[in-house]
Image 1 (spheres, one colour):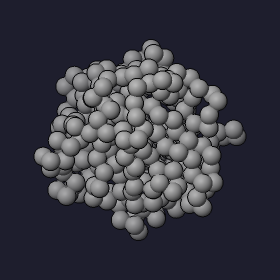
Image 2 (cartoon, one colour):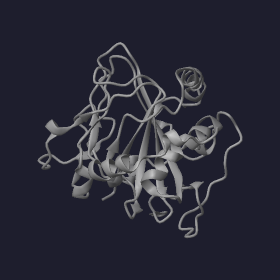
Image 3 (cartoon, helix red, strand yellow):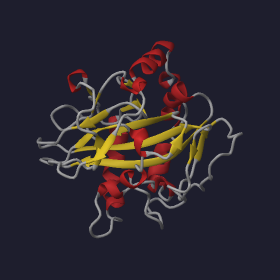
Image 4 (cartoon, helix red, strand yellow):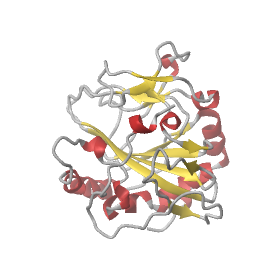
Length: 271
């Protein structure tokens, strides 16, 4: 798929991202027809889940499934990411966040970087909408500018419906009143900084809310293999002159699950 100048960030978009920690209203990555085809194949991936697993256990399956790898390596996505990370970056993670209709599951307020044993902070998350996403079906919310305040304390809380047990500690000084509601059409994506505070409510609607998160980092970002020993990078743009992390081999099968179980965000969040 050829790269398109329409997906290269303008100076104004880059400045907005640096100030606010997110970007919305980006040109679609996939047409409605293309996204419908991709979504139609999703059940084949879900069929690989084992008893007791859910869609949130599909983590790093881009390493074994071209179905996901090809999305992660889409040049249109890379154009957007290059506008944030610069010309040399890699992909290292992907995961699904699927809320079925009438789901009570939430995602508590958190910062991605708190979970990840990686330094320095130079990563961006792409959230690709498989369905139309809005306030009605549990779309994500984000606190603009919260990435500029550094990491804040998180704590484990199992008394909620959040799919993440590790979230912002009670009493953390931030106001959810300033949160921006994300709205995306199927095939669109958003970008957010790894330190931006964000979360999402339940989905009381009759519509599914499915999204694929893809994580990209500059080549200067190093993973702690003692915490996440299965970490692998897939160079997207430029050259990796630093070689700080293991390099993965692109998959060949359309649908396949890894032989290992990826470290969950709760397991990685050891701070």
